[in-house]
Length: 460
Image (cartoon, rainbow, N blue to C red; front, top):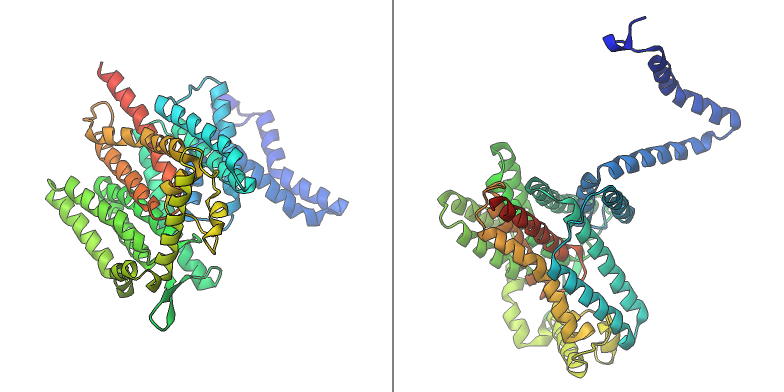
């Protein structure tokens, strides 16, 4: 017998290997003898699920990447329901790490004070709410969003982790375009159709939304991912750069295919900011210009007709049904705020409180106005401070000359801040109150804040 220490297996190891190899056959025979063969597939699926859960529990950072990809792909992806259990699995792993001595990395004082203040105001708004179910629903969304933010800040600890998160988000947005196109081809998901009112007739515009139920939401998250894709174009290897270029062009084309008119504002901001930032680099300037030009060329002609028709729509509000409804909603929200400036009408209660004037249940179509009318002035202040708690670090990182961390952190901080500003501009035209897409860039800013503190302490 060859000793185990000389490269062979000991008797005990050979016995264990034999048991491991024969175990599946023994289990199958037992199920067959007992007449439970029909349950064998469920047992196998359960075993696979347990094995995957164990692997993800041991590697929570990889589980977080999977969760972020799911979030950005959208609810139309198969097995999207696993996102909730996956988040709690990651939470369990994080708590286990903390019990074993891992410190808390969510230490930003402004974030905690603003978050605590916002939660207190949201709970207090239940006193003035007309619909408790609406308030509880929004509070539940906020709790899930806050959980994902905390998991990101706790697990994303290095510049390379931050860069991987940028890649995962951009991959998720690319996949939402692919999944949406595949679902359309298979007939699983239908295109969004918007009514366009004319002088005497009404027509329908078909709008692409990826794997998301709302075309405007899809356009907002696609636009916020563009800076992350541009960062990949700038700082990846030559082989990967081609893939990033293709990805950026695909995202821009998909954005215009949503026919979201509000998207033109954050998109213009992103393009101008990137061109100003890269003005000193002729190569980067030309590359960004070419990418944007390709996207504009791929934009449907009907999109520009719809955008340039906005002026006429505002001159004659009833000419465009979508604009008309939004204007009524915003006017009603402002009236409600004037009657309840400090208390608000209750978290998520705008639709219920505005029923006296709105003949359909729609949001205020402005995230900050929705918060203002629901939670009052102090609620809006707390909400904005939570956003600024992360954004300020991204802006500071874009000005910092990094020496102890990779030099590309300066560029990464800039593009993260641009992603956050882009989604905030989109929030002016829709309800992104407690959507993950608004808060993930804020969490990235808090991560950059942690890295900035490490950078400054290393310089001392």
